[in-house]
Image (cartoon, rainbow over all chains, first blue to last red; front, side, top):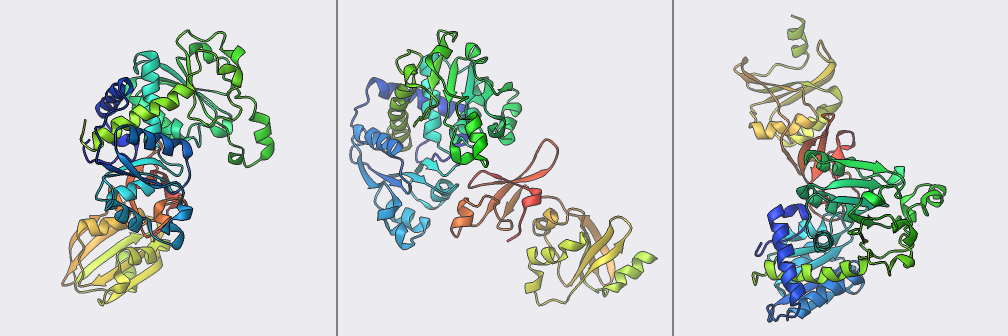
Length: 302
Length: 155
């Protein structure tokens, strides 16, 4: 993986995914190691994403790397009309690795083709966010002890949620049984279902989440965004039907864990937070170790 | 016999290539894709010609020009039924058909308005896929979205 960009989770084979997760475990045991001392990592956030940016920057700094960059395009020469090509080529002169977030779909793939240094995609528009996917896989493996043969339930906006799409595709390596809970207008796109079918795996679709909770090992919640609905009345109709409250978890399996890519709004009630099944805040913390594993692996130090 | 007469509606050529059985509405697109409008060779074309197989068809004849398979396969997206006839000294020396390529580069716009290829000066690249019903789709190399056949717009 040395010097190779990570743009889409599909760029990595099953073995490469497992290698990153194994390496992330060693960083969880010892997150502060000066193995990237002397390296410069550019953190280019063409659109703001505080959580992802701070996670990457903290991960890099804990390994001794220096971080340069910007947190929104507003203060950069992009504002003056500079092309992505020029920004990337310029910043490549100053850094060993570029972490980038961009509002346009495909921007990261393009950057990886023009940049002489490797790129890590920290989200390109509605397309891919592979480090979120890796930290989700890490969280699943850590809480369940395995990635194989699990019952994984996705709830909410399965149509537009890019984290759901990437994670579904990655889980196709691991013999997952998929349970898909969404309003009819926000079902998983057929292109993603095709991946499940191609892997000869099973999925079931539901509109009500209560019946599927007792079967699940992982409940992956997502936010339903008002702007996704052409008709505001439709939104009003469904907005509360995918809100998880603590009492709904009474008949959950003992190993059930609840994940959420965050930020949450009201889809998980705060009364769930103190339930040991709630795992979304630890999930975010796991992002540090996965990002450390990736950067160390791409820069060739591990 | 009637076939021969129709061929002659568009002048016969002594040497060159005839592209027959083009959907009549796509004749100009084929000319554009192959860049025939930029050649200095004599070029003849016809549209709305009678065809036994298709009802109506278009035809293109270009003098002193022969195509490599990868070049001619570019037209398969708009004219999958096209027949290619190579003419030497008024004689047909070879007939062939076109094959839809696995990759489609720099020819089609990505349907996704938020794709980098629609935002910056980046050439499009697609992989050709087929859905379960056998319909052709183009998967964008950059934004990873599919452009279905009915949404294909040529650059």
